[in-house]
Image (cartoon, rainbow, N blue to C red):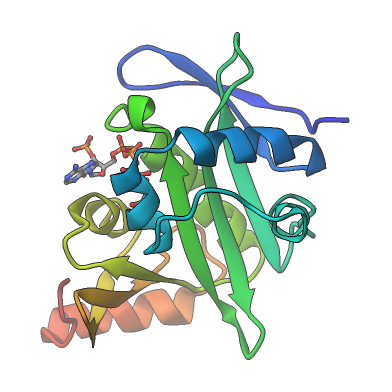
Amino acid sequence: MALSAERVRLKDGSEVDVRAIDPTDADALTEGLESLSPESRYRRFFAPKRSFSGRELEYLTAVDHHEHEALVAIEPDGRRGIGVARFIKDPADPASAEVAITVSDDWQGRGVGGMLLHRLAVRAVEEGVCHFTATVLETNDAIQELLRSVGPIRRRHLGGGVAELCVDLSVGDPCPAVLRGALQAAARGDLTPA
Ligand SMILES: CC(C)(COP(=O)(O)OP(=O)(O)OC[C@H]1O[C@@H](n2cnc3c(N)ncnc32)[C@H](O)[C@@H]1OP(=O)(O)O)[C@@H](O)C(=O)NCCC(=O)NCCS
């Protein structure tokens, strides 16, 4: 049975439903990947990925909502999946989690990504996460701007046009030491803006 959804109005006035992912979303995830443009697909997976295996679908949808959380945005009428944002904690450092987010091409630029990411950041802080990491193409301005909207970013160049971003989460109060540290670093001018 699907978890309860929140109806959200976007900045362009359209409405979407948001809820935590569950195993019933496997088909929507498959259809979402199949309908993604080659450019969006490459930006998300760094490869022309066309399908998920059964094992991947289980891993991506049957999450424990603590170490691994994912939120989906769904069209209220068509029930079509339009976006998914997830974090997976680093087993070696549970205060750190890798974040990934994808929005269907026809919904991009309408506020879905920002809405999902802010809700995911709140969930992450509730689960003790202090920073998100993300490996992104350096040309992917959209994700860099989006991540900057949830907290200050540090960027490490990995080469080959790829960067690792580290975002200090500035929502809630569960990691005040990190936030204090980031603010002090910013005040000293030590924080390297991405
Ligand atoms: C990155 C992505 C998730 C953004 O989602 P979105 O729904 O289009 O983003 P939003 O409409 O919520 O935009 C939020 C903010 O991001 C920034 N942004 C969005 N698109 C942008 C673009 N093309 N260029 C620069 N900044 C952009 C803006 O700051 C925007 O805020 P604003 O609308 O107030 O200016 C979406 O483009 C996507 O799915 N891309 C393909 C997959 C991908 O790149 N994933 C990231 C790797 S994990």
